[in-house]
Picture 1: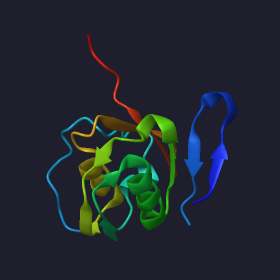
Picture 2: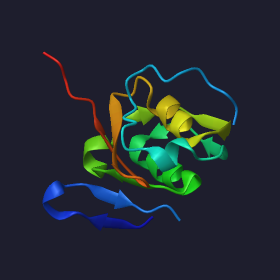
Picture 3: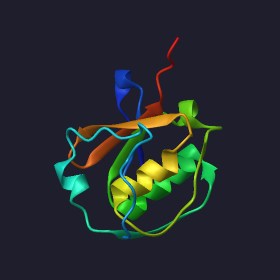
Picture 4: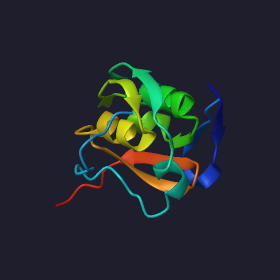
Length: 120
C-alpha cells in the first residue's frame, strides 16, 4: 500500500495499482464531478467486511481509482462486503451504506472519503 501525506489537508492518499442496481439513495454519493467514474464498465469486486481503511485500500486497487482518506479518522469504522460484478460507483455506495462515511470527488479519478457531517 502506497500512502502519500497531503500536508495541511491531513488526508492520506491510497494509490490503486455489473449488474443493475437500484438508484443511489443513501446520500453517500456526490456525482457532480464524476463523468469518468459514472461511465466505468462493471468490474469484479471481492471485498470482505473490514475496517474502513483496509476495505477502501482494496476498493482503490480493484476499481483502479485513487481514494483519499485519513487513516486514523476511519480506523474502527466498518464497511459492507462487496462481491461480484459492479459498476464502481454502485460498489462504493453499497460498501459505505450505513457506515457513517461519505465520499466527494476530488477530480475525475480521485475520491475523498470522510465521516459524514453530524447534524445537530
